[in-house]
Amino acid sequence: MDITGDPQSLADNPCIGVCSTSLKGDAICRGCGRTTLEIRDWNSLSSISRKLIVLRAVDQGYRPRQVQ
Image (cartoon, rainbow, N blue to C red; front, top):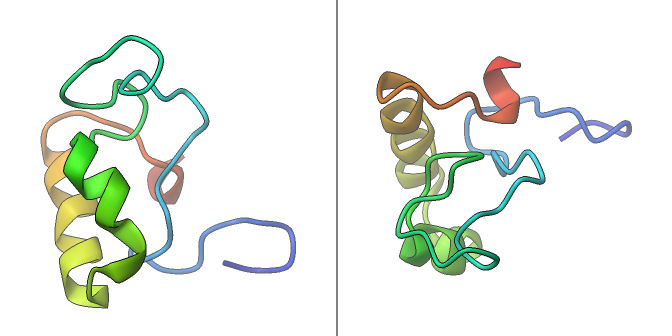
């Protein structure tokens, strides 16, 4: 992430600030497309795992910050 908070890598946090897992109990966040476990474990995941999660979410039609 750069100084303005914009993502510089697919491994950066894809959150767009519209979390439906904690507020509505969704299994997959309507904002970024991650599961509750992926959100919880994000900081401990490898860079490759993070990138794969973001790519899967994009493939499923989600628009995380990396593709805004």
